[in-house]
Image (tube, rainbow, N blue to C red; front, side, top):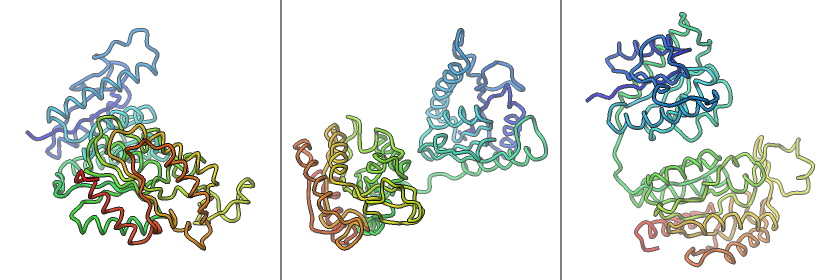
Length: 396
């Protein structure tokens, strides 16, 4: 059975637009399932499903109705997906429609095409997209019925989602999969680790530890995508302390539920510093006495010993609650490209404060391994890979 495209929208206000999407999709040989998520049961054409009819909205305020419709629509979409009836989802809307459409799309797993045509696409979409593989297309014009421009945009969107659905999975999993977190200050380490893992027939899935990347990795760990996690760049935790560039993480970062058994090797990559948005011409007064690594429009401030102790306690609290196998690997000669003897962020006393706090408070089954290398040394990468492979095999 060929799968359909789910067309989800507020048909009371955007009925013409979604009917047009349906017509274009069907003209390309694909079937469509239409789902109305409007707050009324007034619509321009009869959909296959009207979510408002599936819930009781008596005495609800509008915001509560919207949330109830979203939750019910997610149940419906997931049920249709598990039945093998849908292979993609598309929606079009303004502020509310974008919020509802993308919220509903997020219930579908990675790889299922998710396409949103939005009048507010030029705004900050970080919360709207979150960690999901949602494609956003700017509508350019508002949605108040159809015109020559909106038809062009919507037709392209319909064609795009059909094209996306026509591509099957590129390849099946052939080798054990390892998640690898990284960011700019440990790029050399990431490249070294990746090459050695691949030499050992392991597939590497990299995540940019920029806040969203780390959270996406955690979500996929929960979904058992990986055989091992090599958490090289735990830097997001340092940025979170300062409201830094990569600090937009939630409590799930470096935390797993009880059901997760995936082994994780934790490395303090980038925990020597926090990256903030200023350059050498705009140093905030409170940081002028700090060791600072000027990178580009961002700069890294070295953590003090007291800050490192606080950070270590955060790491300890997270790891002590985990139930999966965990090891910590610490490179004694530095944790980032500027944290090396002779470089601006080098401060062994601060790093030592972190390590002492860590070792004093960690639960007994979390082993800490220290090696006399810099994080970007090839020898360090070999140590990390050896431990990771041992953990995946159940020997570590």
